[in-house]
Image (cartoon, rainbow, N blue to C red; front, top):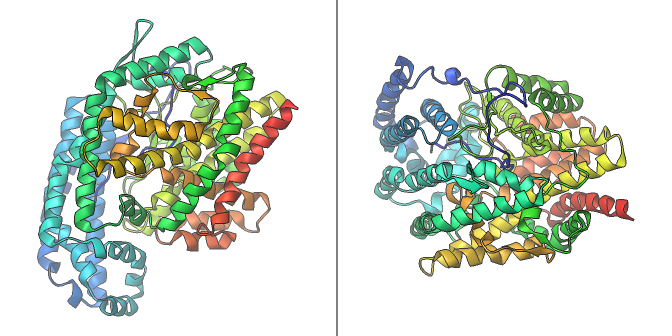
Length: 610
């Protein structure tokens, strides 16, 4: 019910240093808009209210939902929404503090204590979705027809009732709810804390994971190799633990899915994403079929640029020989993204501005800070927070554009309220990827020469391959892993083999895979926190490519339609949201449009070599 921040697709790969200096003054979060402290009267007040209201809600409504009038059901949902909001505020505060420093014992304890307390309190609410799903269709339809304000919650109720065939008994659902704190949540925390505490020796320098992965983008090939081998060495040492975490979570999921009679391991993710399995399958098949004309073709071109017969894994994200190694300071990054947003529509820049000025961004890379980047919406009566690990690379500017896009989306959707603002993952990437595209197109239009244009195009192609090809390969790996786990526990070598089975296929024949690369699955958090999450990135990228094509064609009123789509939050299905643009994600040809944009960029890069 209550979730922690999600990670965005652009996991930064940059050297961990300090919060200021060569990049300018990097902003840090001000969490006072949630709570001024972890032990103040405000959070105590909300915990006390939550405990009392959860019990009162159950006393007032358990066993009575089917007999409510439309007006009474609306009051019930409003009360439920308020509970969600207060609990979400507490967990957002606890989670954000924790991600600022995952190795701080006090922060970790506070988050675990809050998770435990709220799980205990909210056990009283488990009846709500179970009982709601037992209401007869005709009875619910009559309630909705009787009250137009209630009817706006239909999408929430429809998504809830989609789980009706897979619902367990009330007792079992309560058990699973209570047990989650020592189940998946505990294993997720073990993964996070273990990964944050790892150190990697590179030429006698002790680095964290973020810093070591950053070496894979170093201009010096020897440094890239050292970074890759350091990652391989450390994860080889820790592989039994990562295999144990992965095996346990996959088995836990298999057991719960079996009890719920869910047809596939992916089914629960598809239901949560409000997307049809056949749409995801069409996306997956389109991307896999396009591997030769996308990743295979591009990486062959990159090998030529680097003067290599074959690429090693540490060359995949290598800068091009003509890349400008100049770092981008924070003021320049802000200006670049804000101007790109304003060129699209001044309103977008206006919405983004408070993130920079009011402590809504935490940009510096610091010891213990969670790796990567994310935007967390918190609750609708507060505001989102963006986390970055900013170290001045051009890709970091794109990550800023990406996460700020999430933030703008979350601000616009907040008016929908706590239950309707949350967007399924498949659509949650729309504004973020669109924000990246706006920034990229602005930079491309201002390129002073062909060499700069080539560098920008190549960088964008690599990002899109990482977002589309790479994520679908990750999805295939997960599908294979969960299928194999049903036959018994998987050894580390077995998981490694599944990982390697998708690497050559997706990256292409130009790659050589060093010994140790087979362990690189272990550091990817999505496999642990959100099984099958990854296809949402490819979905979002394909959707945005198609959307941007409509924008470039001069669609009348595009900006208004776009803002309306973001404001809808989770209140509409993807078919309804895309209809104003003449797009339909259920059409298999839809995905070919997005993939053709990537292919067209590679065409242009090849033409530059002629």
